[in-house]
Image (cartoon, one colour):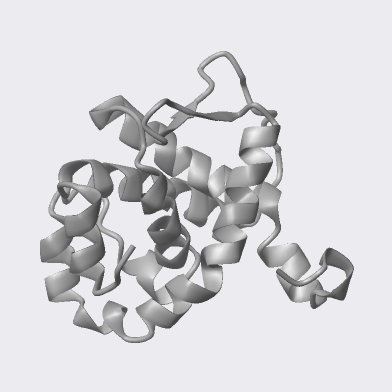
Length: 161
């Protein structure tokens, strides 16, 4: 991981742990409502799906079939493996931030659980792109919850955990 001060300003701004953590948290909370604790490994798929503009723009609002979405948008798989690999340190940093902030907890099985007692401060003004990331995080949480086990989801995206 590159030292924070040595990172380009774009990386500091766009991929900071607070923003990426909020995106992950929304995905996790939606998944939890539907299926229970969020598998830790899926954190490494959420950000490359949600932060990539072309992928994010094609996320279905109501579909519950991730495999159908991917099959009808095969172009989403182009470069996905590299994107996912490059975002692993960012995902880890974001999860660490959320764990240290007591926003998330790890259960005995190593799954992520959101803190139901903690309410995040609402930020009044946000760009439409930030709101799109957060709103689509809910959809990805739903898709993950209905897509099967993490190994199957990784296979759909053509990557290994």
